[in-house]
Length: 114
Image (cartoon, rainbow, N blue to C red; front, side, top):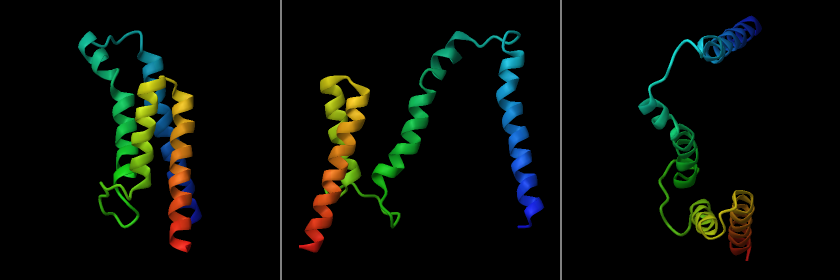
């Protein structure tokens, strides 16, 4: 792509983003969302997070589904889930999950070297 095509693409994406995000701000008071839709929108962030994190936890670098104990991401996620259900602290859950993941990765690397 030429430089001008890249800049044009960036400009169009900026305008599209600004238009879609500001439309709710500009007409937000004139349009009412039905209560049923508002209830369903409560789950949108959790669904988006699951759609982003799920494939990363379950699919390895070769594109194969890994539902085994050899998958350190899956083990760390399950450990973090158990920790969250026990403590109900989001920050501590993130720290705990990352510590478990790091420990599993370090043990895996040293297991291959030794």
